[in-house]
Image: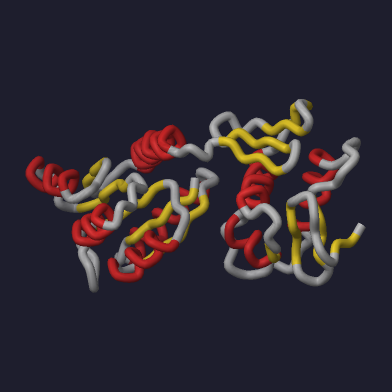
Length: 230
């Protein structure tokens, strides 16, 4: 899942990011309510994790603003304020779930999985299709021309991101950030290896290639591509 975390405590934020990334989620961290609101409005996230006590804009105000703007992304509130009245206020402000601090990592992940399922069930875009290539976001299954394609978890993430950006240029930097959760280039061939494996699965044996390399720029998934290489 793509998860936005808004948490101002450096230690807690780092622990959250580590926990979520270890569970193979894509995580974006913001440390104040104002920047968190901007990210939530601009970004395409499956779930939000929001602390109540934040600088510049508190977590409840952030959620109220999102709901007033018809942003329905499910939100889990994390807070040291854990009394019943505190939880009720948080839920009424726009939170979908409320987890008091300190929390167990296993419970956090389980609650986020539940919220993530709500996102999928509410979305009309549970299926992605490019030409005769189909990807099911619920089952993580893929087919091309009716033939099943078995994807490893990272290959699924890569294909989902490429299909979500059909006919658009996707740079290596974009892939590192959105598929590998890296904000720097590790100077390895990890992208090339996964692109090669994915191309073999979705293009080999089919008449028309869909995954194209754009020389010196990145990749494009679609029926047509400019400046493509073999």
